[in-house]
Image (cartoon, rainbow, N blue to C red):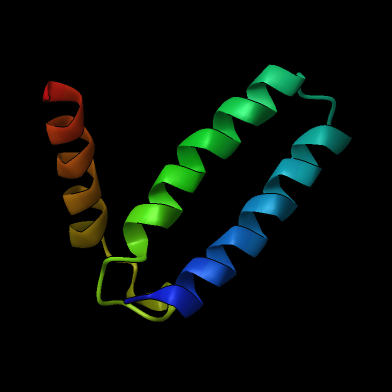
Length: 73
């Protein structure tokens, strides 16, 4: 389980949302980004990477497949 990476990503996510707020993005946009990124953070908890540098193209492709399979159910 990748709890430490998930915790790091959650911090980055909140910083990203704060930056969106500073730039004047709509609340709905902020909420949509937060929702989508939290889905990724939850998924990453079940993966075997512990450091941000381990987020590879192959891992992101696996996440895309996960999303496609989830939406087809």
